[in-house]
Length: 107
Image (cartoon, rainbow, N blue to C red; front, side, top):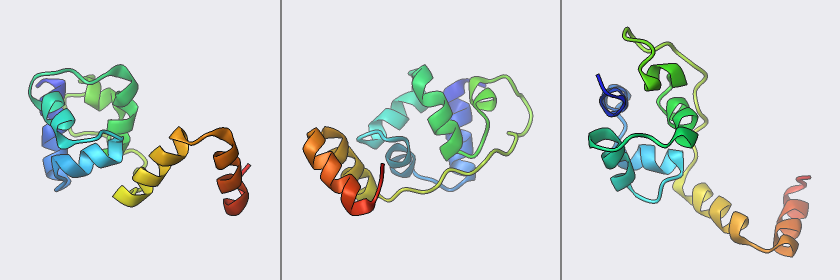
């Protein structure tokens, strides 16, 4: 089974759409997940991210296990709105980020 097939199978087992997985992994659209599942490999920096979203180990995603995926710590769900806010924060200048940090009492 290919990496993409493992990802698709696990996503379907969890009842997640490609859109949901894309949002939770930080992709802009479901087409990225579709490409990973059908014809493109997963970028190495996204292996751990997608593994957490799919509640399996990175080793399972990589194909090092052929049996049932071992359970791992579940990823905290993030809403689409929270993801959009986080992206805006990352793009903001340092003064704006500092103001947001103070409001949220973050260091």
